[in-house]
Image (cartoon, rainbow, N blue to C red; front, side, top):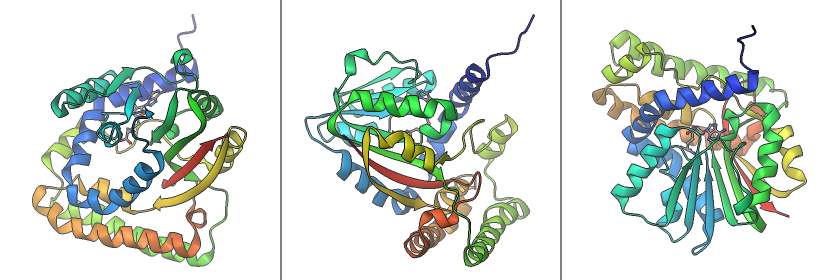
Length: 303
Ligand SMILES: C[S@@+](CC[C@H](N)C(=O)[O-])C[C@H]1O[C@@H](n2cnc3c(N)ncnc32)[C@H](O)[C@@H]1O
């Protein structure tokens, strides 16, 4: 008897199990460094809120996780639906809803691909997709884009914040910049903390129970495929690089003991500034490497 699971089913089971197991630690990590969060995320948050906010309108937060982003919109008068496949994440989102006393937000536990969206055709003014698509198998990307297109109104807006990859070759200058900054990060965030015993007890315990910084199947989305799949349904008004090393930096800082974190946090400002400078000067695609996470913001409008 063949006991092997269908590869797609296996993919989804692995991802769901990972999020149920480690989603709470990820949420905890994000809350650890408000200073870094402020430096690295606030300009991005201003941009997607500006783009998607329509008081009185409806917003879908796709792959909402613990729901923390849904509240940006619900608390400013949008009616929000958050969907996530991980039960633990939806439970956390519902707890957050209770503690914040927000009524115009609801959460549903569902796999987006299998989700019955028939009652939502053309229902949403805005769709927010933050760090969700890169968890899907490539064969489901087109289906996902079409399903998003079916639930958004004509003229409605979609903002994707996803790691993207491009086939553009790296120039020598870029390779040199990459070498230097990667070495700096390796020393600062990996070697020194290990040599000096700066890793927090919680992080050590999470590593011992199998935690890795990334889920089993996540990998950046090919920008050429994204353009192709979105092109029929949407106007693509912008694809902007946001984070090269700074997001990884801020994630890794959360692995450190509290005493060490406060010395590292101001350095995040430097790495964020460097990302912004390099992207302005060379464009995000120049830094693409297979498997490298370059976090980009994509603005779409439904045709
Ligand atoms: C990196 S987290 C992003 C959470 C939140 N959007 C944020 O930016 O903090 C990705 C989320 O996508 C969810 N997810 C992965 N595959 C999914 C699917 N097929 N349908 C719905 N949610 C899914 C995971 O459970 C996880 O909570």
